[in-house]
Length: 295
Image (cartoon, rainbow, N blue to C red):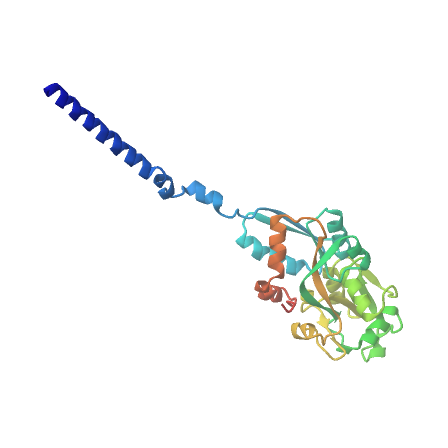
């Protein structure tokens, strides 16, 4: 009898322990994984990756100042990105992006039909007035578009014909393929008709040449004009941000970043292009002497 009672008690104890273990396992199997926080390495892997890489830009020398200040600002916030600038002229820059040898082409004129047909896509990031510059000693202060056209085609050859001191006009311009030259000649209506005294390969060279020659006249991006030369009025209107943006200044053009249709840009290239076209950079563009387009 005592042995039977002891056996029953032992059996009851075992059954109680088994039930307790089963209850514990059934109620807690999912809870540990749900409540454990993600480790720092897991959180880092889920965060957006920092931008990195190289963005190569190529083209307009007139856009140099604008592109460089935009690049510097962008790289300050994106330390893993390097943006390179090569000033080769608008035509070369556009062809480079078509050929796939650069990430962003730079053009200081509208795209030509054949460039667009070859896949070039324009993104306007700023506007620019093409200033007509003379030596500071020149007393001529205002020219009409018609007079400028006649100077560049050789019909007007002496400053005395324009109310200035007598002296042969030295006609300074850019090389063939330059976006500044293309924009100037198209707007003024003298494409393939100009008679140049000197054809120079950069905006800086034009400024320096006019600054050193009392009889010279040239054209240059408004953003490049400094106090070594004098910008004359055109049709009575000064070249300024306000007159470029409102359209009253006659000789103006776009500053364009160029991509190729169908070519997938790198993340860094796309981010820089988006940044350059955003309203956040208006003051940066102004500081570079260009005009932000209306958004």
